[in-house]
Length: 158
Image (tube, rainbow, N blue to C red; front, side):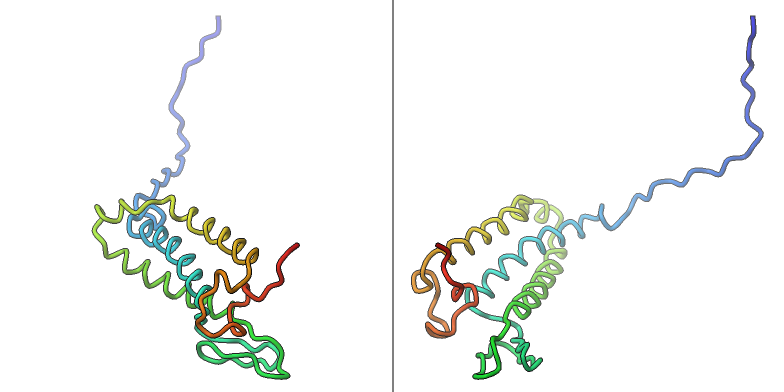
């Protein structure tokens, strides 16, 4: 009968690194920022697009950028408001997220995580509704009937 005797190893293995106990992803303040940012950006984008409030207007034909909203000029092609809406939404979302990190943890934990996916879904449905109905039925008359949002001017699908 063979018997084996376990002997302790003489080779020194390096000590295992301990898992980091404080990382950015585990931080309560980062979680609060991410949740509030995820909620604020689609809401702000919806407001920017709905009321046609870009931070700047880009004219691609002339490669010109104008601050806030500017109409298209004759002979220069269309204007692009999407860039201005996106930048303004990201800036406002970041500011609101930073302000939310100052909330006490007891309040920050009450922010529903479901809003992070629910609000963009509702926004997508809103775009579908706005493309399906005439712009007079759903668009506010901020700049007049001929100078409304890009999405309101899209042709209706059959």
